[in-house]
Length: 172
Image 1 (tube, rainbow, N blue to C red):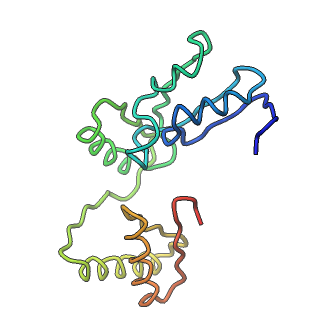
Image 2: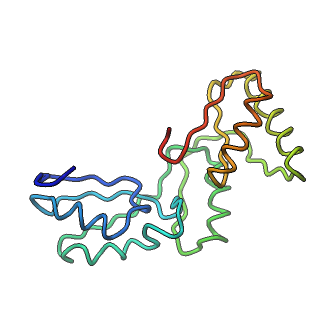
């Protein structure tokens, strides 16, 4: 625990999922007001917790101690992925700033509709096999809920000739 400890500086990453209370608790263990908070509101994974606008954290600090910077440049994804994500962001959360991609092109994003669980599972199996055949070393399949992930993992583990690992939100 942090009881009795005082820190020179604290960095909070993925802060969109942190509550103002959590930030205030960490701030209480600082020797100064040196705190860095990083996050992306568009990547919040729990609607019921965390912050929806960064201003929710302002009451935790003195106004003179706040420096807010919006970083929009994305170096992690291709232009095609960023543009696809921005199109979703425009309709889901138009108040959030869109990402600006660097010039790194890749494959076009595909949206494929399937009917029913069996067709979905068959499509995922074929996709994974094709990516493996093409030389992919790591592939991630992301689901909406942990329950869906467990169910999909079980179905794929029974039918795929490749090692697969189930990760939860804690990365385990």
